Length: 300
Image (cartoon, rainbow, N blue to C red; front, side):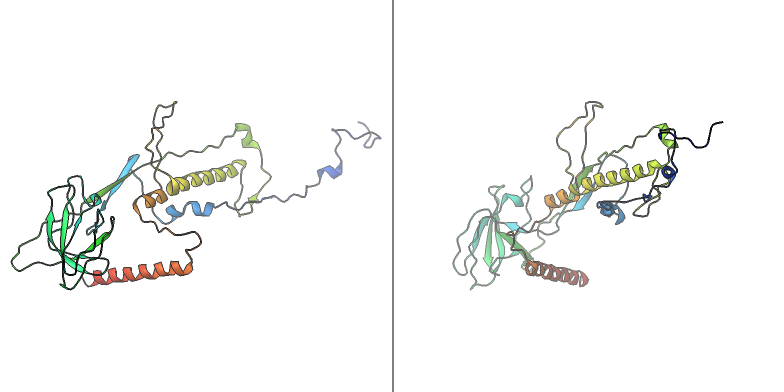
């Protein structure tokens, strides 16, 4: 047994007492960039808009408009006071079989608030019905019409003993979508299972009981990010993209924003001109419309 102290240069097999002190490093893993929006990724799921499907191709049906407007195909000059107005129905108002909504004796409201009754519908050219409207007041004058103008069918007026008008059908629209396969992976070896991590907790208060827990948190984030992106911005695949390994097609789902742009209405505006006052005007207008609808629904 040698001496306890010797005169020698320190080497790797000699440990100083200073080297065994606990390092001054906080055992908390700080989230430098916060949750990077993770709290918003599951918004649709958290609101309860989620349900399972039995197949990767699914859909639903939506009721079509019960009532519709009509459109003018060509420009029409302003007729004389008390005179009829004649215009051609735009093809956008016709289905594949040249059926349309406007019927004989419908009352139409024009842009200058003049109203008139449809007294003739000429279908000599089935794809271009010609509508004739007579003013309700003999002193009224229909306005000039521009191609694409929308006209409102506001009511109808019939004579006594005239019988029933032609029936109308609203029908349904079918909407479908593909389920999108999203994947992520975490890899580790068996020897890692015996390694102890230095960190005990993250700065968000999440305990780290093992090294792989941080990897699981990261995977949840990446999966939520991909799901969020698909449900918001995804476009339904129409291009045939085939995985060369499996030989099967890769499908993508349609998200909420492309769907809304496809079937909804957009309010265009000049950059810098859409201010708070303009927004409030739209809110007040929509509020008034909703109140009117609720009132009509309440009174039957």
